[in-house]
Length: 311
Image (cartoon, rainbow, N blue to C red; front, side, top):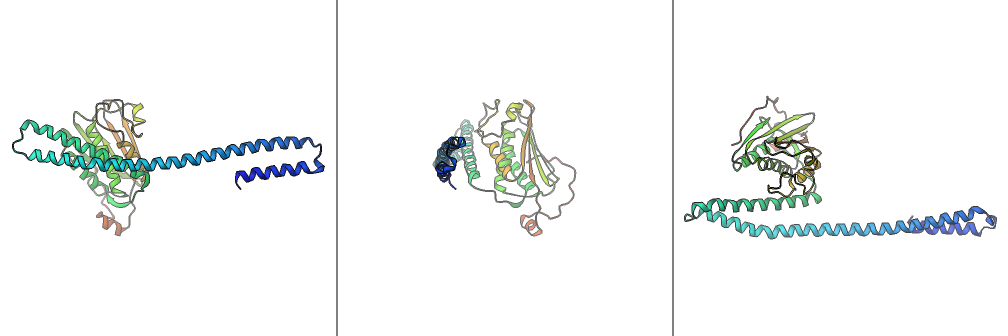
C-alpha cells in the first residue's frame, strides 16, 4: 500500500469514528484526530523525501554515465597524440646525426609519454571496476610475478630484486589482467619511492587456503597516519610531494583485491621502507583446468626460500 493510500485510509477511518453517534462526546476522539493529522503530515514529508531521493539517484546515475563517457573520450583523444610523440621520439633515437647530449632528453620524452599512458590506463581500469566483474581463471601467480619483475628490472637501474618462494608454480583462481595491475603498481611504487636504489624483495608463500605475496623495499616509507589512508582514492602521502603520481594505484589495488575475496595491507616507517602484503584465496582447481593453465595438480613440496636476482 502506498503512503498516499495509507493517509486516505486513516482519514476515512477517523471520519467513520466521528460520524458514529456512539462516539459523541468521547474525549479520545479528539486525540485520535490530532494523531491522524500528525501521521498525515509525516506521510507527506516521507513522500517528499522519497521524491528527492529518486531524483538524486537519477542524477547520480546520469553523472556517473557522463563521467564514464568523459574518461573514455579523453583517453581516446590523448592516446593518438601520445602515440605520435612516442613514434617521433623513437625516430629521433635512430637519427645518426642527433647529438649525444640530446639522447637523455629524448629518453625523458619517452618516459613522460609512458607515464601519461599508464595514468590513462589506471583511470580506465578504475572506470571498468565500477561496471565489470572479475573473470577468474586458473593461472600461475609465480610465473606472472616473475615476468613482471623481469620486465621491471630492465628499467629499474640501481635496484636489486630478490624473489623468495618462486621455486614452484602457484595456481590461483583470478582475473590475471586485473591482478597484474595490482602487483605492477606495488612493484612500480617500490622502485619509485626508493630513489636511492636498494633491494626490492618479493616473498611468495602459501598456507591455510591462501597465497600471500609480500613486496618490500628500502625506500622513504610513510608515517602511520598516512599509512592508514594510503588506499584511499587520490590520497598521496605527505612525503610524496616530489614524486609523480595521481593517488590511484593503491586504491585500484585494494578494489581489485577486494573483488577477489582477498586483502591488502601495509607496514611502514619513515625512512625505513615499506612492506605491502596481499592475500588471495588459493586455487582449488580440477585436473583438466590445471592442465589448461599449465600448472601441476599436485605440486611438489615447497623447498626453503631462495633468492633469485632479477635479470
